[in-house]
Length: 460
Ligand SMILES: CC(C)(COP(=O)(O)OP(=O)(O)OC[C@H]1O[C@@H](n2cnc3c(N)ncnc32)[C@H](O)[C@@H]1OP(=O)(O)O)[C@@H](O)C(=O)NCCC(=O)NCCS
Image (cartoon, rainbow, N blue to C red):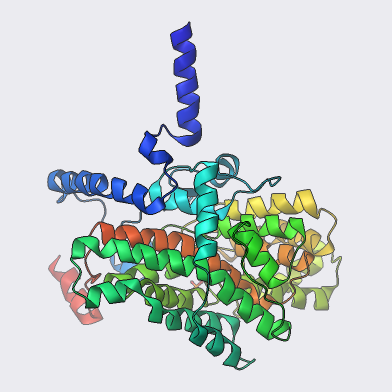
């Protein structure tokens, strides 16, 4: 009986936090990784030795012309996206992460610090480990003077995402990886300075992002400073100028759920690709951000709000379903996409949409824009299905984030993708550290011309 209850307890513990060795309780993330990396290198070496030549898929002509959709061509450790159930961070769904990850005192949403720990180590962290990251990021958050100056000198008409990506590129003056590489460091140690750069970059991103926001929309005043006693999202919210506890909770959720979406999406793949040339984490991540700035990717969260505003102007706040349908068909007939709907991999409603909807149902159920977004959710999918070509008629993450930000007073929709970018650093940089730790080579897939492809098909 005693044995059964011990087993049950052990099982429950392993479900919640994973069974950890004492060393896994360390709050020193670099040490934890240094312990894990040789074991993972060994595991993969053995796997490749036995199965390196095993086929895991095939490539058709349509895949080559179709944006490489469905080609299994990348290894990405932090997360995997299932078409039906959505993202799993190291095997955990969003609701599971919301339950298992450490929270701020009195908070209900997960801390992005905890998610980063999970993404990079594969383990759910303890409260102490998440707190240690809050402290460490606060300590690493200062910007070099030349970056602050550049941010303050950017013209006001420069899009926030261009400012964000440019400032991240400029930060490479601080790269530890560049110093080590120039100094002739052995390749087995690349991951160590990639880790340092990644931690520094993540720590500095809220300051960069808040400076852009304050400069563009608040006359350059009141950015404040990072408080080592507060978590990453709390500091970020205050620097942006928002002290409403609900907004701070929203930021924790927002920065958690936008972090990673496996490796093939544009921002993740770009960061990975550029990093494979041994460009440092600043240059690699800035490249990824230039991809996130595209309207079919991260800029869609801005586009959703622009579209909703047009919709409101044309059909009012409480349109009938019929009026809404006409507006949607007009969008499609004019050759545009319905922003916030569809996905290259997902085939169901995005769980990142669902958890934001749940946040809205809890905190702003009567908001008129939320009601409109809910009505759009009902009306859009059957229309997209009726077109006969859209593979996924359901909403993605971008269909819901803007309405929440609007509710708490962040009305500047041109800025929304920067928030997405701050969060995306967590996933793509966690992977970058592993890419160097595993010694992955420069990426170089083979391309063919149409003539050569036709020849290859004929020969086959
Ligand atoms: C996300 C997205 C780029 C995926 O593209 P994809 O994998 O090529 O999607 P599909 O295979 O379903 O595309 C098939 C067709 O349906 C169209 N389609 C897909 N989603 C659509 C949408 N939301 N509205 C209108 N048309 C859409 C495509 O443009 C394509 O048309 P085409 O054959 O005339 O070129 C696409 O769904 C889209 O543009 N969505 C709106 C932008 C958005 O929300 N982006 C954020 C994604 S997280």
